[in-house]
Amino acid sequence: MTPQEFENEIRKLKKELNAVILAHYYQESPIQDLADFVGDSLELSRRAAATTADVIVFCGVHFMAETAKILNPHKPVLLPDLLAGCSLSDGCPPAAFRKFREAHPDHVAITYINCSAEVKALSDIICTSSNAEKIVSQIPLDQLILFSPDKNLGAYINKKTGRNMLLWNASCIVHETFSERKLIGLQLEHPDAELIAHPECEDHILAKSAFIGSTSMLLKYVQESSRKKFIVGTEYGIVHQMEKHTTGKTFLPLPPEANCSCNECPHMKRNTLEKLFLCMKNMHPQIEMNSDLLNKARKPIDKMLAMS
Ligand code: 13P
Ligand code: SF4
Image 1 (cartoon, rainbow, N blue to C red):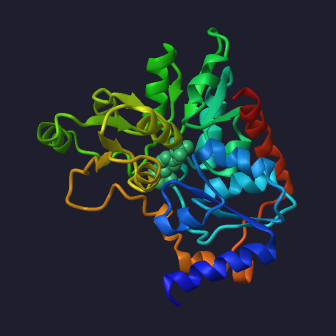
Image 2 (image 1 turned 90 degrees about the horizontal axis):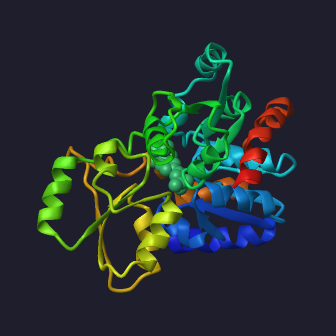
Image 3 (image 1 turned 60 degrees about the horizontal axis):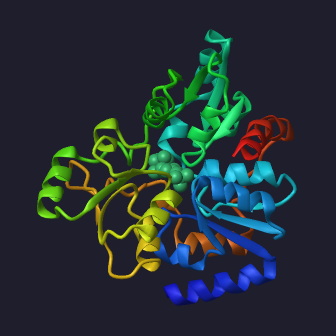
């Protein structure tokens, strides 16, 4: 089948199933174009919580589809490739996280949504990159906090809020790859370009950024800014929407140190048009969870939705 035929079949199946297709900005462009909604982690969670569709097709990574299932326990949630993981989630195994919590019983656990349902179930409040600062700011100043699993986002929020949260030591393989050396070269070549970055980047990149925010915040920023050229310090999939929603603006990818495409998330890119078509045709693979875990993981997500 050609890409156009896949797209036609997916649109047909969407109607037949009364399905909604939710996609993250890091999905390949044809998937973003087919989706009913493209957004960041918080917006996708909100959409999943509010949908009236019978079937949720989630084009993103596993923890995102799992969150949609937690918010819709009675609906099928399809993920084109169940192996679409996340290095942050992998970097925080539930047994080790439980020990971390037990070692700090007087701390509140605020956990980035990029984690497994098991880790969510062991947490007090979930956050995303777009509401982390808001949520941390609502915690009384004398309350100690554990922030997991992203040490870069945690350090950024510590700086912004003046808190001293204890940080779990994990990071994103994509956002850690950006090269400061190549950034300087790019800035010399394009002195009119502004660096914008996701808070999962390391501090030496964030320190040089004119704007830091979640994927949706970066998109909004380039739409509203009078600047014409940007160096984009996040996964390059977001540029599809930046180009769609602006005219006459240039977006340069912040390069990785090696000559590779490490600024593409290999997990996000596991989903393809073909796999999207097959999962809708076969109603498989689906996210399956036991109800006990689902109920426990839901509490800190509900808290996040109420606080943001
Ligand atoms: P956003 O919530 O900003 O889209 O981030 C999700 C993510 O996985 C970034 O790597
Ligand atoms: Fe996880 Fe990084 Fe991929 Fe985002 S870009 S899904 S944090 S591995």
